[in-house]
Length: 404
Image (cartoon, rainbow, N blue to C red; front, side):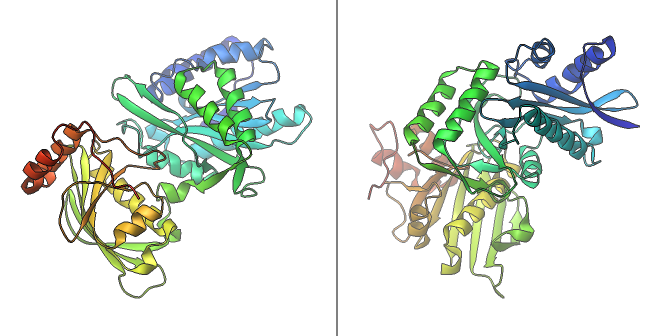
């Protein structure tokens, strides 16, 4: 029988359950996150040493065996709830236990706010960007993001934390997203940068996080002043719900990792565009072979969706990929002008096409592409152009970009 409850005391039974949750669920799904010592914060909370803040640990068991749980925090100063960690063991996924854990955790945070004398302002959650973080074999980050989308969370659209991990199986650069769930759900489409800075600052203070990447985030939000940070659909970003997508994509031909898709607007009777692409595992790049889109598909929201679909497919085909190149004609201006992360490379290429570059996911900064990395990719995906490109880039450290 499945039971979902909060750990509320330091009784031997509760402490044993807490320890088993940490060892059997938390550390399995979140290796390397030792700075967030669940047991330490639980005991600080029990001793009343967290000030206006409150920690909640919810654990799910099935006939006494720990099968999942959630660590959440109420931050008193900004009056927000933090969904810090939620985990369900593989054997109990898609059983409804995750929903039970989540709903209880949310209710406990709202009750903490009520005890402080005010209704809760919002929920936040920090997750790894599934497009820009090495894919772990123990979890599907796209699935996790989709669950949070259905729970009401949106992306705060600004450059959040990037950090390098050396945890076995998760080595590399990890890009984090800050998610926001306004209360009532859907009531806000943006959040003032100053408000978000207070929230993030209190969040970092609570967990004692003062790494350079975190300081950089606070500096960015400080500099943003009175500007509002847009809340972007998390579901659209990870292409979680095709029934509401702005376009319909059909597979014309597939020979993994090569794909050819037809693309049409949702209300169109015939295809408005086609796309062919391949993910190259050896080089760690995706290369867009052909992208021809009619004008109905060049709206920014549509382009964002199409790019996300392509990138998600390339990650599924080859987990090593993290950036891609696009060879295209007239649609190049739409891709660059839509601010979806594309930049044109100033290198000799086909007279009838242009070569664009994009890192996976949401890109905020102008890229710096090492020449050696670029040539390694071109040697694999465009060997006939490699010698010319190598001669053109001789003596350079990074690939030049077209500026306008």
